[in-house]
Length: 433
Image 1: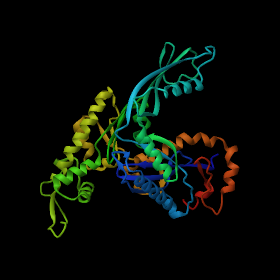
Image 2: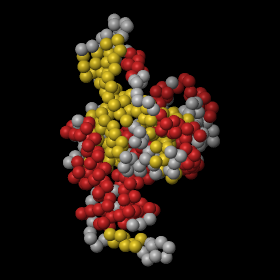
Image 3: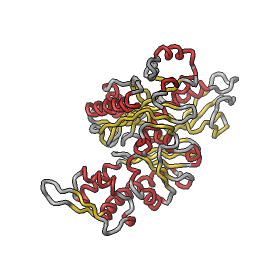
Image 4: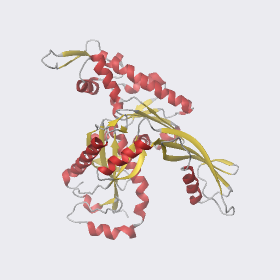
């Protein structure tokens, strides 16, 4: 089945942008980004869809731009379904232990037994309005044997497991589904955004050693802590890049669009790294003279807010009980991670080694160089998640290969759409490469 490539579309519905990324996996296991489109997000506040119509418009625009960007329209693909990220203040996490007794004690534990335990955990009683998004196994126990990573094949009567459960508010989840459906698409999967970002920017060694991922978005900052390859703690801090921009508006007395440009071009998270005499001159409005802004004062405004955000991150790290077990330190990603000197300030505030996370390691060739920016980590991670979860479909060539070949024509993308699934044929990649 090496001549068939699965195509996945990741849809990141963020506070500042809606981004659609189309990708596939090459023979070396690397991600090939085929196209990317983005649109201003005007219907999302702090990670939650508030205005469905505006969000629908942004989704359609982002998906259409993604189609157009695929080798300038040479690749043709029908986008019917997307893997969507979810974030926002409504996200919660909890730890839960569940057990089942096996009726047939003579047989070893099977994969079906484990699936039954996980399915039963999905029936956990939650506060009104909350819904389970993910049930993530931590470790299992079989009778008196504890700390079992994989119970399949072990003989025993009672199978138990510790689970990290991630929940979200029903209305917030429904609004995502409504927005995607009204845009003419299906939701193939709904994935917590920091989980997606982790796939894009973290290595397996970091996940095993212990690492804290901090994803600074426009409206919120998402925290996910991993140890021994498993997620151990998640949290959402209700501050992101937008509040830093708002602080610059008030602190420097400029317009919001000017504040955003100042942050991106001249912003720094460490005031001491800037000279006193560095001045930026910005145009006045309504005939007023140009306004001078001190770069050091700008950095002081930014530093104050960033320190507040990472004091909250440090609180979450301490709450997880893993403060001294993060051997791989902190990895910062998201649009807000592009501030100069941010890693230095974070190390100063937390006392933990820090690096900026780029989604470069998993990406092969791409027609969109900007995709390697941390601000697209979630979108790239959604593609990776989708490809990993769908790989088993490709192991059934007898059910699809003949139909795919019938769809090949004119040297373009061969496509097969069945419940939103699509594949690329190697021969059809010639125009792209």
